[in-house]
Image (cartoon, rainbow, N blue to C red; front, side, top):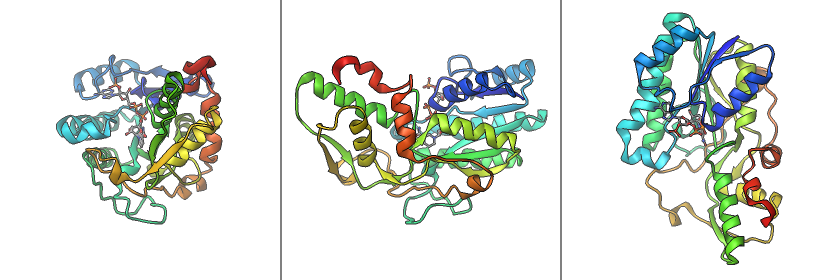
Length: 297
Ligand SMILES: NC(=O)c1ccc[n+]([C@@H]2O[C@H](COP(=O)([O-])OP(=O)(O)OC[C@H]3O[C@@H](n4cnc5c(N)ncnc54)[C@H](OP(=O)(O)O)[C@@H]3O)[C@@H](O)[C@H]2O)c1
């Protein structure tokens, strides 16, 4: 199968590229990063599709700055809603299979049992609204597209775990014992981008279509993720204060509880490990933010 991966410089994009390059059953035709292809540029997109003629396109590109989406809603709409819709049309017209990635932020977070694929979305942020509109446009233009909703992604690039590790390193470097402060009243399922990339390839091999939820097993708060990362990273002596979301005002509201029910993926044969095991794998990998700290730990 010949693949095209968009957003190839992002967390999921990079993991998909590596896995596809390593798997003999698959071939990576082209993997444009943002600088190589602006997904909202239809002409350039069509040029690449015509030239490379992939069997599958995996769209890992998105405007993922959740707070900036509040102040730049037009940009969020263009990248997260319009561009996936155009991509879906162009893939449909050429008989190319499309995998599009979406988010737990399409839910409002008021549930207290895991969200299934059929549960009604009700996003509370511009990011969530733009991503939901993207799903709808993809479904309308390309009914056999595979739409993967995931949550709390960490991997090569910008993510919460990397931020916490860097903050811990800065505390140690400056010798301040000041505790970190992390919210402990938002619940979700952390997801390792490399695991997500592997599951994506397996679902495409199984010819899955429609919406699937995908996350590592287990439920955590951001505080628990931070604690686990710092304990594993040699910072168990560093205190982390538990704070409420209300003490940390952000431009975009976050769902308080956005655990995804992934049983549909499990039934399709996807094997998901727990988030703690996945986090350990990330921290031991070449992408680990701990590497930049060297001897400091
Ligand atoms: N990260 C999470 O916690 C999370 C949670 C749930 C769902 N998701 C979804 O999972 C998918 C992958 O997320 P990720 O964590 O891998 O995101 P990421 O690391 O932020 O990567 C997204 C990539 O898209 C690129 N991009 C932005 N605008 C673009 C445009 N106009 N044209 C082409 N590329 C563009 C970005 O490039 P620049 O950085 O150069 O702009 C970046 O390389 C996204 O659909 C996201 O919505 C993520």
